[in-house]
Length: 110
Length: 352
Image 1: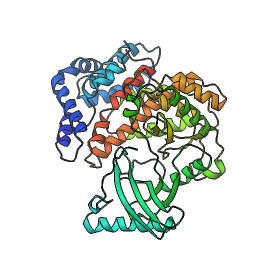
Image 2: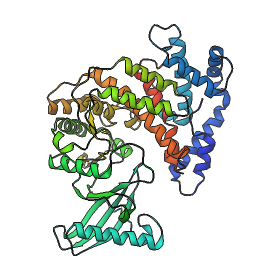
Image 3: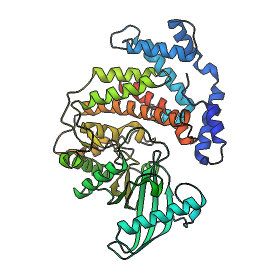
Image 4: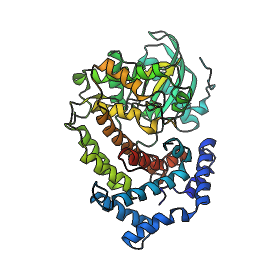
């Protein structure tokens, strides 16, 4: 569900000497939050996708969802729209909790 | 004037190592002397500027002997970086554009000399006068709300859109008949080529195709008009920078890009570039353009802006993932995709 590069890739890059300290700290913080939330952070989203498309890895499930959306599944008036919108919102929020929680807080209306 | 000079030493020089480096510095000084009609030019100070993800900038303190530029000069050199992003115009075209803009009285740094010979610096570059001030977006936003600046930026943008430079700018790509359709097609191509699925981006493409506004006559647009791409001195606009994405487009695209969430530097409610409410920016634009801004059209272009930034973030990420550039800022940009997705859901009425 997470975007690339992974937290592990960011940590490896942050260890290289020439990287600016502030950016290295940001990379490490993202990785730490990923570990904190763990794989189960996306369990509910994964289950909802699997209920719709059958078992598959995250990439395959998201690819099916994307194809559905290109075919109109999110269009106004479609019965599955509210559930799919809630699912996209949940995935996006969890990704932001890990990659940029300050942004999520700043851009969430009170 | 803040003194942030770094003493020049040959080891800090442009590209390459050791002898090759000092060779390049000598070559650059010779180039400057010839172009500036000076008997001699010496580079007193050399400062590589941070912040350009795609292009390199070097601030030069020079001493010129003789000619129209005799004396102490502070210039900036703008050159291609290690990996081209894959779009944006060449330095030579940007130089020509900046000359036309400067001649038209726009607030841009005075462009001085173009060098197409990659042998001198390692890549084509041009020189322009240094404009003192702050361009770091986070610092500008942290300095607090600035209505006068936002109003002036609105007016300056309206002046740009009002310029009739078609005959001078024939080197730009032709004017699109339908700027939105052209953008959608380009973004769809990039997304289809990406290795990962992006359901929110696919939704945004569909929304954009369904809600296309009537095309207008394309105007000269900056293409990246936002906080971080202008310089501020004494809280006032000193220069608009970074013209490499300029081209013919729908002027509402520039207005929306300026107001996009991505360029508010965390201050969500100062919608005009993190510096003021958007009404202030609109007021400056409308007064100078003598036209009313249609909020619905700007909203449309704000969805486009969020999707365009998402695609740019993927391209920056690929410079790390695919092209092997070991730069953490590029890698981290890949993790900013979720910010655009959040904005796209909110703007299209799907966010919680």
